[in-house]
Amino acid sequence: MAVNDSAMSKKVCSKCDKTAGSFSCDGCQHSFCLKHVTEHRQELVSEIDIIEQNHDIFYQDLLNQAQKHDEHIIFNQIYQWEKESILRIEQTATDARAELQKILDSIIDHGTDSLNKISSELRRARELDDFFETDLARWNEKLKLLRTEIESMSNNIYLINENAISCIKFIEVARKQTIKSPDAKESSHFSWLSDVKALFDEFSEKSSLAKSGKKNSAQVSSKKGSIKIIDVNNTDHYIDIEHDGSTKKDQNMTGWMIGRDVNKESKFIYRFPDHFILKCRSKVRISSSSKTSETTKEKDKNLLIYEDTQFWNTGSYVVTHLIDNNDEEKDSTIQTSPSSSSSSSSS
Image (cartoon, rainbow, N blue to C red; front, side, top):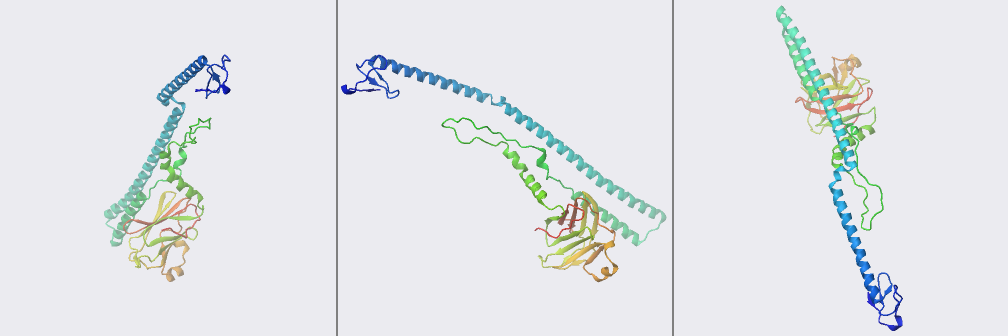
């Protein structure tokens, strides 16, 4: 309040129209006499009391609301999503374990059946006393190849996780645009479960890469060392292996093998001949017996014939493995169609 002492600028009281002792209110811009200025001031005090009461009531409401956050309907929806997602994950894991057990059992059954056949041959040969050095060598080779085959089948079990993200729908919490208070910040959207989502980002990226690839192309998924697969041709039934020269030394391929999985089942294993040398910066072709003429066999020194098969086994998903004499995979080529062939590799 401010007192106006100038006689020339005296104003009448807005309550009683008197001019005696006029006071001006800077808030409402009205003038009051001494009596009514006191009443006006009391009115302002009463109004601020009401505002403080409303403030305290609102503040208490917020505190009560904070204590009941877990009763919000969205929390129930999040819980339901969490419960359903966990059930899906548990079911997927259960199915995967069952499938793994089935595969492992089939490997054991295959090994047992093969050993029983060899056992029958040994027993019959002993009973008839009809065996020679060539028979012993043949049985030893069978046992050696069978052991290698069983180990390869066990080592080549893997998880396909490209579709891991598809069984769970990610959720996030957002709020609609509303009337803002003067102090409200611009942010009106925030994400939940980002940590969980990050766990699946790698799978999602792999899935996108897989979908963007050409269906009839083969991809070399791994390469360790200087020896690599450069071509797998299922039409002419051959596999090309190359020494890239990075070691600057010839490679003795004794004990090296080529394994082939067709639709997740091991189909054949080719063992390189003992003392076969793959020279630095050279190639060798492993061909099926049906696709190679006798003349070619005699002339081409960089050609190896897989006599035990006439055709490569093919399918919708074929993996060709190059394994060294320490049973370590040095390269593998994945093909997604029967007629595809690979012609490139990645370091």
